[in-house]
Image 1 (cartoon, rainbow, N blue to C red):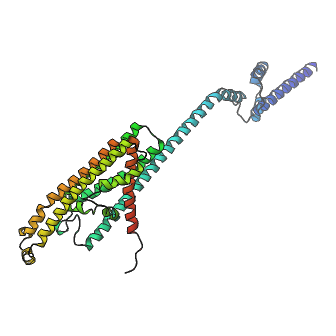
Image 2 (tube, rainbow, N blue to C red):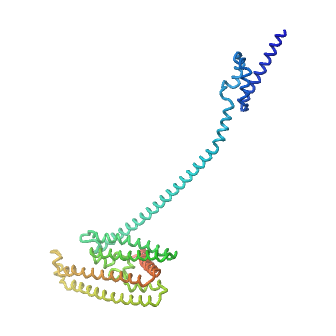
Image 3 (cartoon, helix red, strand yellow):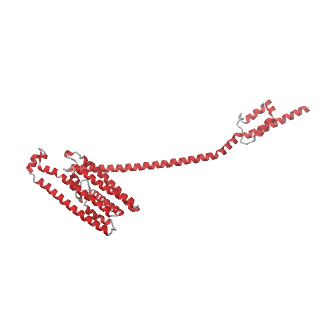
Amino acid sequence: MAVRRKWRRRRKERSMSMSSSSTQLCASRMGIYEPFHQFSSWGNAFGSRLESSVSPIIKVDDCVDNKPEFIPSESMDHLESSQEMNKPINDKVQRRLAQNREAARKSRMRKKVYVQQLETSRLKLAQLEQELERTRQKGVYSSCVIDTGHLGFGGSVNPGIAAFETEYNHWVEEQQRQIIELRKALQLHITDIELQILVESSLKHYYNLFCMKQNAARADVFYLMSGVWRTSAERFFLWIGGFRPSELLNVLKAYLEPLNEQQRADIHNLQQSSRQAEDALSQGMEKLHQNLSHSIANDPLGSYISQMGDGMEKLEVLKSFISQPSDCYNFLEQADHLRQETLKRMSHILTTKQAAQGLLALGEYFHRLRVLSSLWSARPREPS
């Protein structure tokens, strides 16, 4: 009996130990952390008995759903690794944010450049539409008159005059840009060196116009002399294919103040010499005009009509008319030379700032004439 009681007591103690160990293991699987030495001590205490008894192990495995390998050490490892990776993760986030900001900045820059390109294309398209409209209007006007301007015999286009018209339109656009630059420069009070560069560029721009006119005159001098390449208000002040230097000096004097006594005297002398040269050229042009009129009027009308079909090159009037354009070309060249020399001498008389003010006033003067011509063309007309 004593042996049986001893055996029962030992069996009861073993059952209680197994139950306690199973409870601890289930609690650890539910998230309660227990140190590893508990499992090792439990294994040392019941190593031999655990091998011989199968049913308690099955109960423990049932509690943990047959997954004894998922021990709480995994949660511990995860927490430790998270703590160790906190700093590198923050650095990675900062780098990623910096990269996002840089990408956004580049995207904004590309968008800005794209918008600027669209705006430039829109302006170019508007300019092309304006040129097309002007060409269409000229075509309508040319169909209503006998003289087709730059059209030659049989309605063929004179390439020299067509090229001049295109170049002159670009010249006017460039002059508008230079006017804006001069106005900004005078408002911002830039240095004399920078202002001198703008003055020289503006003078060179006018010199380029005289060269363009010289090339176009070789193609058709009467086209240049008639002034059809200018607006109607500009043609009203036309003198031998351009402006009178003495008249423009009167216009610019009000914008050049204050002037010292020496400058006043130099401008007065320049104005007098310009008037004398203008009078001489005007007298020569008047004499040329009279000679042309006399040669045309003295040709017998019957002879003119009878010989038209045989070839107009045999007419004396046509021979005289063909020989005269060289004189017209010389007068136009001398008039442009006078205009160029007047501008050059004025730039020497004035200071850099005064020269910039004068060129600004000159550009705005021609711009106002063009605007006046546009308003005149768009005026409301009474019904006929």
